Length: 65
Image (cartoon, rainbow, N blue to C red; front, side, top):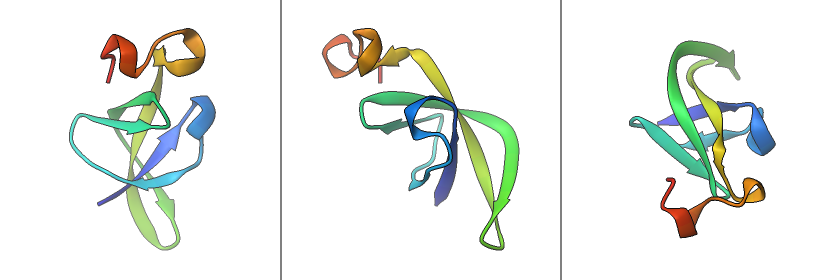
């Protein structure tokens, strides 16, 4: 399933994923209730979680994802 990322460094990216969270380049995105239409498809929107992103000194080493 493809999902749409909102906010953070991955804003606007369409990536494969699903479930409660998606990790994109060491940044965590959490599922929302929203959908957005892209390329004639409805995609689930995942919102960036800024406290779990590598540029903020967190990421894989902190087990944020």
